[in-house]
Amino acid sequence: MTGEEIVEQVKVGLPDFILDTALPQGDAVLFVAPDCLQKVATFLKDDPSLKFDYLSDVSGVDYLIEEREPRFEAVYFLYSIDHQHSIRIRVGIEEENPSVPTVSRLWKGALYPEQELFDMFGINIEGHPRMERLIMPKEWVGHPLRKDYPLTTEPVTFSYNRGYKSELVKSKPSTR
Amino acid sequence: MSITDQGLLEREKDTMTLNMGPQHPSTHGVFRVILEMDGEVVRTAEPEIGYLHTGIEKTSENKRYVHVIPMTDRLDYLNPPGNNLAFCLATEKLLSVEIPERAQTLRVIMCELARIASHLVWLGTHALDIGAMTVFLYCWREREMVLDLNEEISGVRMMTSYIRIGGVAKDATRPWLDGIQNFIDYFPAKVDEYEKLLTNNPIWIDRTQGVGEMSREDAINWSMSGPALRASGVKWDIRKSQPYSGYEKYNFDIPTRTNGDIYDRYRVRIEEMRQSREIVKQAIEKLPTGDFKAPDNKVSLPPRDTLHTSMEALIHHFKLVSEGISVPKGETYVPIEGPRGEVGFYIVSDGSNVPYRVKLRAPSFLAIPGMCQMMSGCYIADVVGIIGSIDIVMGEVDR
Image (cartoon, rainbow over all chains, first blue to last red; front, side, top):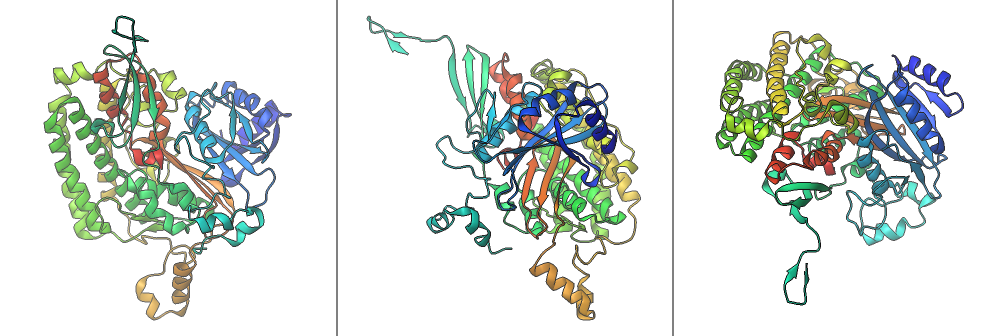
């Protein structure tokens, strides 16, 4: 199916659980709230004409500098091996106590990337069996891929970035 | 262990915890796995990663698009052209640039040569892990030829950075094309030679057949990709299902097997080397003439000789070098088929010359939990075989 057909099919099947849809460069993209994620994911996996049985990856984005609400986003990349089509689910996550339900009950492959999402962005994964750091050392402080996490650990950079939200734009590296 | 009243040692549990790695020679880098052993049999295997974490994703958010390309080489260091290509395709998708036919063909040649070289490293080290020393030396001999070809075209043996946004770094030269022709004429006999050493070798079969099995359903559910998935009977290759860089124009097969054990993964990769050679052969035969990079001055540098005669070219050159490429606002994901499976880049752009977020979909990273699943219930001697058969590269696991 093409991106448009997938988006149509999802809109018909789950009208109340989708916030929005988009088709950037023809890719199907769904915008979903965190509490609807499991419902949408189950539908996408079980519907015979969609059948997204393969989870490619889970990624996170921190939209701090863009000043977008909500601040975080988890992105799920799904693929259907039988129908050879793909979809992205973008889940906006609030800055206060960021958390999102796990999809690892549907796709076991999600266990590792979800754990990485916690490690790198500090987004709590509800129902994940191992909510601990994956790549960074166990005693590490902070979540490296957040935009307010400084690129270096030099003391000067650290204190300068402390009041991040307004200061951060100014402190962007010189390569810009 | 605790000491009893009689002063004897008493075991608290029946299993023994055994640490393997991160400096173990057959964990292919710095992979560490903690094995819970019951005698010779592995009960559970707990992976530990992060020893090679270099923060490439974070660094990419602070570098211009062109500067990210050399870093992608270091992710999966056995497949630099594949990583370059995935990153460039994602950026080009945001930029909506048309890539000339000749550049696309040169990209395909580089990627397929890298696939052959990567599979040769895999075959050599995997056979060495299981105990076949000779194969290692033979594979290194042929890999050396591919590295020489890399050096001829890009000046570097491994980290080529040859594929750039908008095309490739440099046009193909006659000696390089002749070198490839020599290699593809010479190579098939060598693959037969490896097969003669291993495919019907009773020791190899004993060590590999029925070991580390994974069913079709499990392989899909655990997000395995590439040869590991195809050995379990899933006929899925991104070069066929979502063709990029003109792969739809080449005639090649997707080898699949059904048992999903170490032996089948070996057979699939051996056949893939033959198919890659087939693709390179076709690409050399129909290498079109034309530009080797997009003639769009906003994306690729103008030809060097025009700088002395054209003011416009000079300005474009200056702007591209000093400021870089500005990519329109948006987000995109492009997957390609690497030697280890689906390599993909998810790029979020805020409209500036620096990517807002770069995320690599690394096939080895996603394969590790599934790989450790295979280990439970097998003998400790087979653990190295299983790690070797998945062909993990720690550079892309830890990023």
